[in-house]
Image (cartoon, rainbow, N blue to C red; front, top):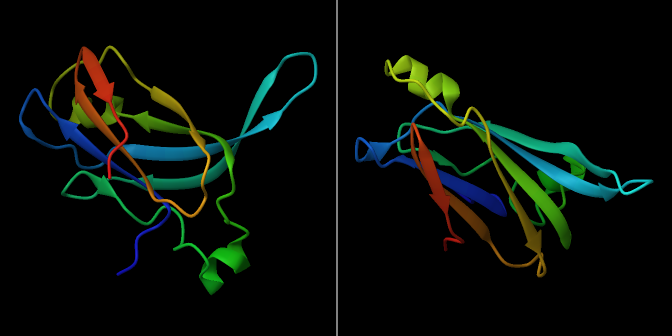
Length: 129
């Protein structure tokens, strides 16, 4: 199965396992007026049993991508993770109900993988492969 051009992986480092059921949204930046940053919804997904979200967007250059107008171009994007419900399901409180990571796509032909390592009171990320 082909993966989309932007993927993610969420790991609960406090338990040492994948975080299943975390809602993930991708937004695209549009320059606003009067120094207002505007991000519009672009894609949506939920992490699977392995904590991955591989198909929020159709594979690059596919007919599905063309039909859905979901071509990833160079620009600024934001991926928003919503781990609060995941932590509540496991009986834990969450200090960060949303984790927003803004990133730039310089080369739309490359794959962009954004892992998120979370605990109820911390998070970290990096550009994955």
